[in-house]
Image (cartoon, rainbow, N blue to C red; front, top):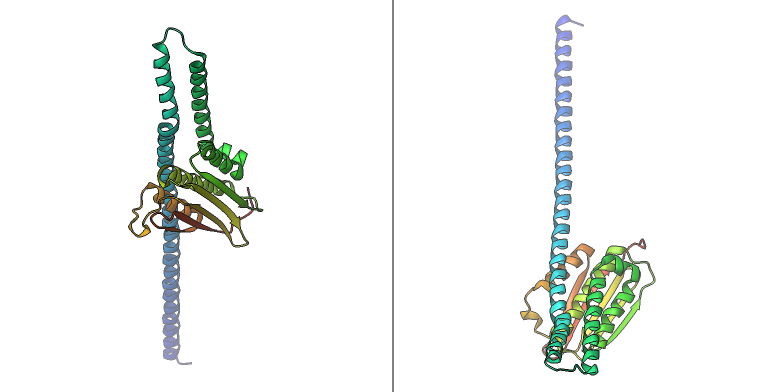
Length: 259
């Protein structure tokens, strides 16, 4: 081989190696860039997920605070107001009738019972200990006891429901019961909780005054419902018309059987 040809071959070999090396470096940099973008995207999704969780917890905490305030005002407050009135009337009498004393004791006992009941329904550990079915029955028993409306409850759940799901479902049911009691003027309230292989179904109905779904604004109740169901990947529909009651249908994807 001529020295000149050998020189050209060496140059071609070096150029070829430089091209291959450059391509390798470029591909490596592109891969690293893609990997970095993927990691950044993952971190952003993680941060967004955490932000949504925090937002949901704040909204739920605010709604629970509102619930406490309403319950204290509507139930305990009214009972204690009556007790205070009875007490003032009794003070004006020289001799307090035994019936008045008995009524004051009953009113005070009732107020204490309402406070204890409210405390329990706000405690997630208590809800978990008693179980979803028992807690819903306690809420409905209180409605029945106050003779606000007639209630029905049906549940057919065979799988063990995860802790967070139990709490979320109870809060959703609690919200519907509260709205029915305070706004619906209903005579009947029913709650049905079922499951199949793919979904959990929660259907809640009342025969109250209803409302125009097209004109409804997203108040705290719907905001919290959206937040809870978003966290559970669930969906809901509302059916309601003036003087024809309200139906809330909720569907949540199948869950694991862990507790």
